[in-house]
Amino acid sequence: MNSFIGSIIGSLIGSIISKGSLIGAIIGGYVGYLVQKKIYFRTIYHKASHQKPQASNYQENPYDVLGVKETDSLSKISAAYRELAKKYHPDILRASGLTDDKLDRANKNMARINAAWEEIKRRRNG
Image 1 (cartoon, rainbow, N blue to C red):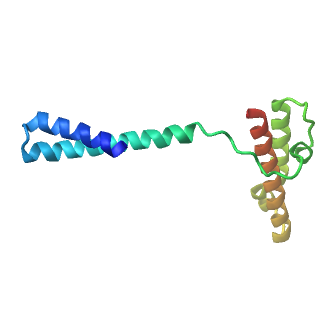
Image 2 (tube, rainbow, N blue to C red; image 1 turned 180 degrees about the vertical axis):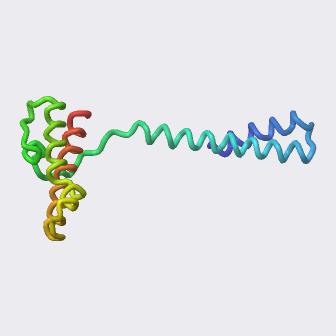
Image 3 (cartoon, rainbow, N blue to C red; image 1 turned 90 degrees about the vertical axis):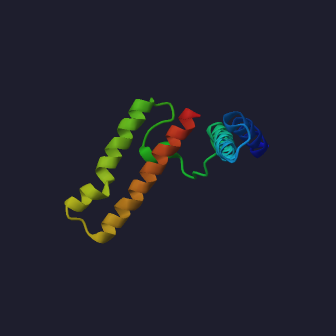
């Protein structure tokens, strides 16, 4: 359907510009192509921007991971997340001279903390 609309608009513009000449047909075809692409991309953008957020497959209780209650404010939860991130961030621990196995454990803890924080934000926003 979009290519049909684009070709009609292109042929109309082509016939108006050069009264049926080859140049008018080329220009009209190109304009039709641009119109077709704009309609197509607008359709894709519209569908993508109006999709419902998908349910997460998060398994743990994210509030327990961060050590907060579900009734706590988002600012309190955010502060708890920042404290844990400071405590377990691999770059900070690497600078303090931890061994590779402890850094690996810190990476896993940081991934858990980030996942819990993202899950809480997802649940609270919608």
